[in-house]
Structure formats: structure tokens, C-alpha cells
Image (cartoon, rainbow, N blue to C red; front, side):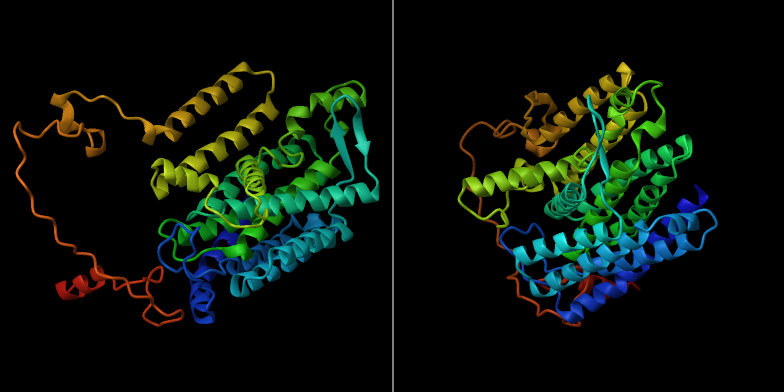
Length: 443
């Protein structure tokens, strides 16, 4: 565990320290597109945050290869090298897209090629635990197609959810934390060495997200872009492929019976990892809904719009930060609920706890729609949005009020790569900077 924590910390530190220089490079390189109709942010923000995340991945793998215990993972398995090869290819495609906006079909082809590169080096699904049938071995073509499909689905699901500041990095970090706990339990508790690569991938993925989040929280100073979202999606898929399709469920010996019974007993363990729909349930649901919505309208499934889940949270009335926290809550509930169920599926308290937390999540989700009837005497105790209109007005005709003068200055665009850009590349002059200078402050 100490070596995993060291790898995580090194990955997070490298990612955090490189994100600042990468932001300056993105501004100079012009990787800062104009505001689009579907965007939520109001100021042009540089992309290419995936560059720092990729070098964090490389640093984590390099450190792990020289540690006493984790070095055995590189000696007995080729999966870390397969991950690095696929990650380098998908990262390069993402960098080109962040700069030049390449076609969606080209990106899809690149994702399939990256998955194929990993398959060629041994990172593929060999068998599947099917309830009622036992351990089903897959042919080479079946394993390749299923692996490529899983990688493409996971990459696009994470890419689709990357719409708010800190949303994708935070949700993937939560999912990778639950994944790490499960993989570490399989490796240490049951002594299955085949689960070691997946445990390492999850630790490195957590470090990549934790190192990037301080720069990406609202208001974000840099976006990860497709170079980052596709990268973390591929790493998440690689861990799921490693432990789902290469760890024999009968080796867990949770049930002293036939292989079919062993697989049936371990269903709560493998359901969260089979086509990791519960680990990335929210991004996958957003992906499916987006495809159905766009196809129903006669649009291309790759056409961008403002119908994602995070956009709907903003339309309901949630603030930017609250919408992100709500998505965090549901992601953690699904990931850790599945993890707890895999540990002890017979406990009714786990089911009741998940149901109770789900009810709390629904209340928080619909809170902006809730308008309580506040008595007149308590009007001054609640926020203005809950007060009755006209309740505090005196009787009689109201006096005419002069319209308030407009104080907002017109926005003037700032050219990309300007040296005067500060923070998240303002569209207008930042008045608080000049006020501080007039006040004589040192900041």
C-alpha cells in the first residue's frame, strides 16, 4: 500500500506542477477556442491540460517500475507497456483535436486504433464470467471486438461528461478510488497476481485527476480538453479490461462447488466491472441519452448540443458548483454502493443505505423546483427566492421608481495569446485588479 500511495503522490505532484506551464503554452499556441453556443463558461479558457496528465501517467509508471514490489508487475505482465502505448496514441489524437478541431469520425478511428494497439500487446478480454453458464472463454476475434467496444464506449462516455469545471476529473477520480479498493482487495486478500496491473492503473489514474483538479475547479484556469478526457477514459477502461477479462473468478474460491456456482457467487463482484456501467454509470447514461436525443432529431450522434445531464442541472436552477457536487454525489453513491455490495451482498443494511442516500440525492436534485409556503412573519428569515411577491409591500399604489442605470460595460474580445490575459482569459477588463492597485495592496 505504501508503494501505491507513493506512486499516486508522484503522479499527482507531476501533473499539478506541469499544469501551470502547460496553460501558458496553450495560450501561446492558440489552443483557446472561442465561446460556442453549447459552452457553459463565459471566458475563453486554454485547453491541452491532457499534456500534464499524460506526463503524470509516464512519471507514475516510471516510479512504479523501480519500486521493490511493484516492479514485479512490469516483469510478469506486459499490460503497463500496452497501456502506455495506447495512451500515447490517444493522447496525441487529443492534442491535435484541442488545437485543430479534427473530425469526429477521425477521432473515433483513432480510439479504435489505440484499443487495437493495447490488444496486440496482450491487454484484452480472454473470458467472461456469465451467471448460469460459468466461465465462458472468448475467441481472439470476440475478445478483440469486445475490448475495442469497451474502450470506445468508456472514452466517449468520459468525454461527453466533460462539460463543467472539474466534473470529468472528479467523477473519474471517484470511480478510480472505488476501483482501486476492489482491485487491491482481489490482489491482496485472495493473492491473485493478475489483479496487480489494474490496481496500479487505478492508483495512477487517481493521481492524474487529483493533480489536475486544483487547476480545473470552478472557475477553471485550464481545461483538460480531449487530450485529457480521452486519456483518462482509456486508463479507466484498461483497468476494467485487465481485471474483468483476465482474472479467473474460480480462483477467488468464494464458493466450494462447481465453476458455475463460483461464478454465480461472485456476480456482485463482477457486475460493477463488466463493461464498467456502474463505475461510469452517469457518463454512460449521458452518452446513451445524447445518442437517442440527437438521432430522434435527425442529427448526427456526434453533433454537439446543450442537452447533457449537467446542462439540465443548470437549467433546473442549480449553480455551477452545486451541479458538479450533485454529479459527484451520484457517482460516489453508485461506485461505492456497488463496491460495498460486492463485499457483502447478503447485507440488507447496504441496500437500505443506498436507497436512503438515493432519496436524499433526489431531494437535492429537485431542490430548486421546491417553493415552500413561508408565513408572512418569517419572510425576512429566508432567502429572497422563497419570499412571496408583494407580501412585504405596503397597501396602496406603489410609488413609481426610476429605472436603475446600467452599470455593466460592453465586453471587448481579447485576442488569443495576448500577454495581458490573466486568470481564465477575461473578455473584458478585470476591475478588481485595478481596484487593488489603487488601494496599494501588494497582491
